[in-house]
Length: 160
Image 1 (cartoon, one colour):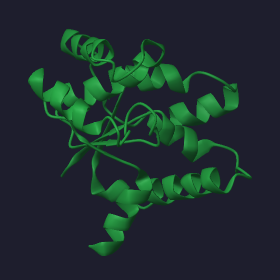
Image 2 (image 1 turned 90 degrees about the vertical axis):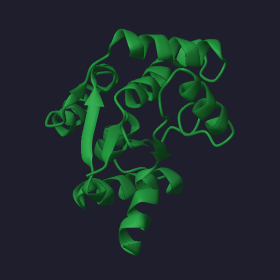
Image 3 (image 1 turned 180 degrees about the vertical axis):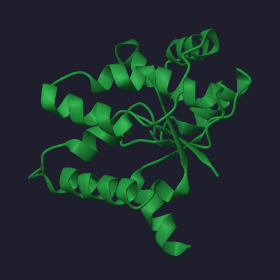
């Protein structure tokens, strides 16, 4: 079964109060449909970095995010993860202020995940930096996972 790293935006969209913004509402619906529909039959993983981010904000929302994530195995934040995250920052692919996004990419790459499931198109699944990310991760000796939203994965599920 393919493996997928669940980044913080996934539980955030899953538990969020319904949005009046049509794009946000669609993302919430896609996230819930993908998660509740079996997550494309992936083996799901997360990390302590995600749990730390999920704890932030409204206490009730944080509790729900953590409940959703609790059954998932946690990938270790190793020295290799830290080094790769710093490499991504040093290469200018992820800004220092978004260091946790570099950690998400690094942990999924170091632990050989097949996919990163995310709604973060600014620093993680950014189509303008994806090729450079792939090259820097490869130069460090790792493989960049496919970065995908739940919506893309639902479309794949429906085609199979």
